[in-house]
Length: 291
Image (cartoon, rainbow, N blue to C red; front, side, top):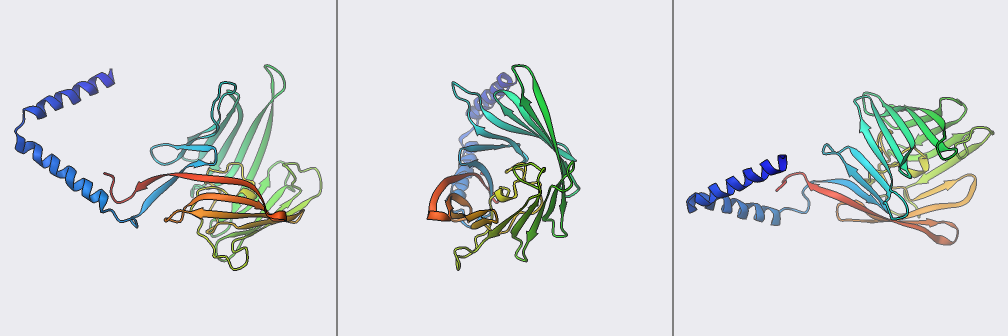
């Protein structure tokens, strides 16, 4: 009914405009010419808003206010339904619901402080145990931040000895992650892991500004695209090494004229083997004119 009324309104406006004199039409045409010229003459240096819309095969969608609405990890096919996550927001929390095989597979609640940072997360994993039964596994983590708003610690609330400590340098980049009693999410053995991140490797490479809204992969945070874990590194990580693995991984980036990543090649240090190529796409909005 609303569409019908809208169409009727547009139609009546069109009929009325046809009955007006030519001098009433000319100003509208003149405005169109002006708007077109403004678009053509718009400086390439004009400020723009970038929203990540595609990361490899992953697609992102947003609410009108710019908040993340849905992340589709795999589209639906004839043989399988889509794999995706949806997001719902409240002033003090966010709920992420992950769907697999047309069923809720995981639900995570992020509690937020007054700065919009997550200080507690509660994750429920629904593990199938049969055709109509499942087991619920609950994980709870607590997050703290330093005076600069950067992530300081991530601690398992059920097993306090399972903890990750984050170290940052003076340039605002995450340089080291130290995990205690942490291996593949398990906290049942004494274990210490260290990951070191470099931003100027190979030696002498210029550091690149980090403009992509993606959480650091090495940090193993519960959501790669939900930016609620404090400030990100100011630069793009080039090399990541681990104390438990020989060699490491390094990354090569392709940037667009505005400095945003359009492609990332991921290599293994040993043998320089290409592991993966990831492309980035964006929704771009000019912040001066919206014509």
